[in-house]
Length: 424
Ligand SMILES: *Cc1c(COP(=O)(O)O)cnc(C)c1O
Image (cartoon, rainbow, N blue to C red; front, side, top):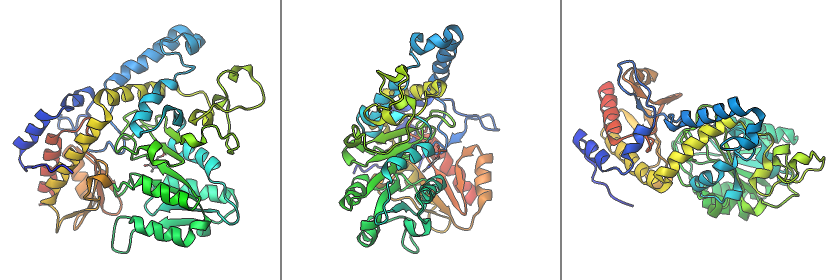
């Protein structure tokens, strides 16, 4: 790993911004203005990514085509709506390390999670358990429990939590191995959020997948906090499916359409159970309105409805920004920028705060979660007042996510100064 010679000065931060090959990308985003008239120090891209300036033009294009073309827009729009989702596939696939056939943008995250479990959670009386990590996002837990119940099993018996050891915050892989040694024969699905939304821990997707497959379990990855943040290398790492949303690190707007990955090994497996809809039907015969369903090969075959073009236009704008920057460059800056945040926070660590996110850059994305000692939510409110946008999780955690496309070293430096003064 590269060693950076970080320094705790404003000058140093400005120098790093000057040297940053991605420095001009900040200009390509709308940065919200705080009460004091200054641009916010926005560290909340893990919750809602900022708006690229391109987005409006892309949306207007579709609004104009709709206004002037009506239904003809399906074929005659500059970017015809009929195959519009295909415009997103290649760039999205690159960001998650997948082949285009493995990726589709559709629905939203929790919906996609359910669709994937319909296909990949097929419990039997001997093999019906699901493993999730302890601090999984509540929506994932609700989805999993409701699937277990829909198959007439009892979540108390069928749901296993991969938990940190007492007194620890992070999950250890060897504990997952131990769970599998004990329950593996009964486990039907391993569903892990990488990166974990609360602790910021990125789990080893390849090791988890290999472990699951050793016991003949299916493996799904929730990339809500991974997509656009870490490189999950989905194809090579080999999970059966993955799902994500596009409004966090992918900057595609509130509630925008989500993503879904189905590994190539399942691309032509028509014996998989699935919930079907006309948009997943073979494109050649979709409009023949036949009654027998023939799925498109690959992830597209799981589509249900014709997609919301306005949302997809926003995704297209964002993916164009990602493509221009190059995901490898984004990740390289991210490692350095989050490392800088960690370096500055270390000075405050001890009595006042504790960083619970892993120290190893390979085990985290850009987010650092800090646990407050001797402080409460009023600190978060004061940060907000000072124009620093972070995110509060009960009972005592502040999540800080410097997003490499629009956060600078100077942002990080200034934010830690403000935090320091408030803690003093
Ligand atoms: C953000 C997030 C969600 C939100 O799900 P939606 O269906 O997009 O509302 C679900 N799971 C995880 C892990 C998340 O981080």
